[in-house]
Length: 113
Length: 115
Image 1 (cartoon, helix red, strand yellow):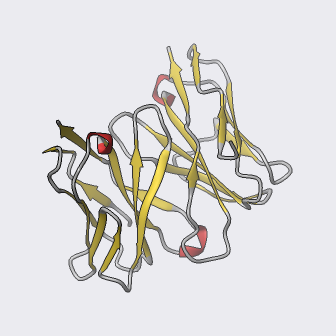
Image 2: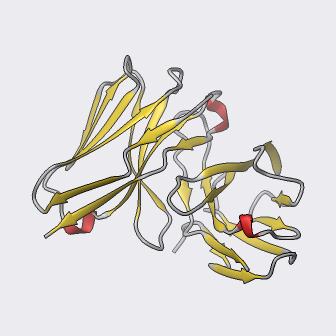
């Protein structure tokens, strides 16, 4: 079955890089996603990566995918206090035509000034 | 604002009462999803629609839960005879599915508190 695991908490200083890690179980997942949730708000898609890629960069965000180890990471460069939020990793559950996402439990990122 | 809209944002009810949540998706989106999120957890899939057809229901969706999308636009999620364990954030998301990434756009959620 599908399962997505994340570490629960990360604390960094403003200006440092943050790395949030995720492992997933289903090797047939075609897309993997990172969502951000701020207090009292819905989930916002940050970025996604197709399973045939091993890296994707989008401004301050870098996604690394190790398909062999089923490991996904999100690196945020020059982390700002406004990046404080919960970050969810998600995989597109097979069969992919449902569009159904399986989420991890979320990593709370605390950015200290 | 033309994002996903959910109402009410917060509902407090007594155990045993029925509640209904409404979701208005982004207008051109053909798919609509309901998720449930409890404190400290990620969203869990409940059900989804393509247009007006309900294509999948999770085992989490007991007989007390029913969802509809009568005209393929807005959707309702009804919970009958609420229990304290139903207390959660109910999230709606929509997408324009043509295959591929099928990016989900989420609403801000409806928080249910069952006393």
